[in-house]
Image 1: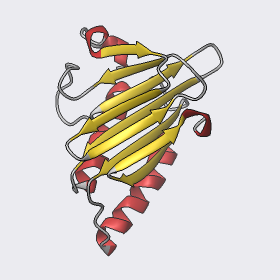
Image 2: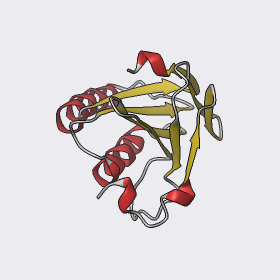
Image 3: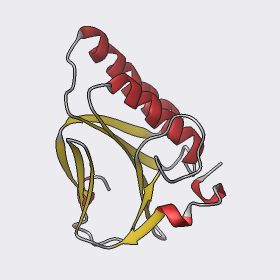
Image 4: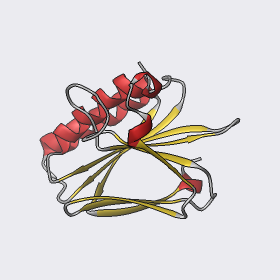
Length: 151
């Protein structure tokens, strides 16, 4: 299944060319700087899209003739392992293809630095790259990303 297969995907999607797209939940915030002025579809996955089970908070899609990029975002407290599961479950349900370039961002208010968490994160990064063609990154509290650096 892909995003278009969900009956209510249009009511959960806002298309914008705004210079800055800010996604915030509690103390976590992700800001995409649209320095290339591309049209971006902002999909509110959690709390809007009719998906059962685990899911991430947002999906940003840049879709043009020669460019297709999916950016999955989970805004979290400190449960990074759970955020990884949410992102992975969403990719399995919504990704257009495993050949399309994807980025996954976890923005957490606190990133635990235990050996167990660090090892789980490294394993997840490898798995995301191999299985989904996705780059997984974990950031703290407020994170800004320029679109031009992702393309």
